[in-house]
Image (cartoon, rainbow, N blue to C red; front, side):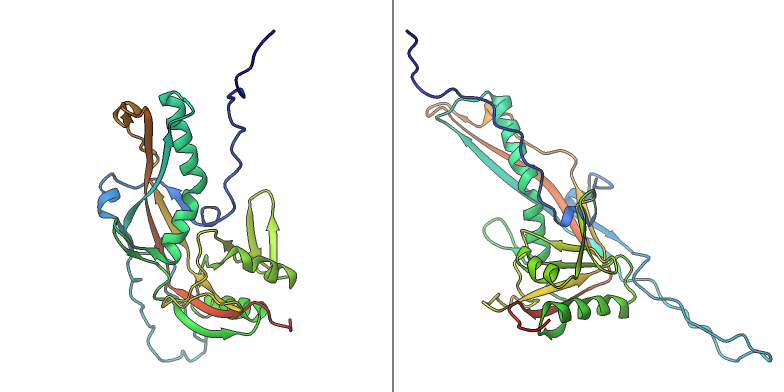
Length: 281
């Protein structure tokens, strides 16, 4: 008679796909242009943020006046930061290779959330402080309902002649926007847009807070519109050799996986405080 002492350890099921989010609408994640950029960051002058077009009449005799020349756009920069995931293995034995792969999997499933948090509200603590990229957003005021919020943000992008604009909100805003017919979805591309095609990101890492850190309440939170979001990513996930992080006294393996990112926003940001539980459309 065969005696069993406990359950059989098997391989885990394949991990689920990453949730839809900022990675699906941003330009990137793309490799850093140079290795130095992972330490010093990136800086460039965009081409899409200044409306340098105007009109004049074709008359005979010719109209008088002088064409207006617009300057170059304001430079855009992205400071580097690292996303880290950890994994501790003790009671259940895995090979070094298995433990390292599990650490990488944990990072790839959740790093988008971390990047979204850096983008919206930033972070602080013992490992340094970086403000959110939305902290200087232009405040458009208060929207009584989701319909008005979309109208105000779409119009702000149009008024600023932003090409490639994006709208950002917490996942909890999705039923309010979808219920009023503001959203279109594409299952093949994992993208959600407004009816005129502006991408909408419902980021799990978004805090819903205002540009000066105004808190989310029972009734109200903030939505944003921005120009394009650009992401640079180290193609490699760094995991130290497992043999170097094994505590031989406790036989506990503590692994860290990390990847370097940089994020930049073109053309500016705009925000609206929106009431979720409004009673009118």
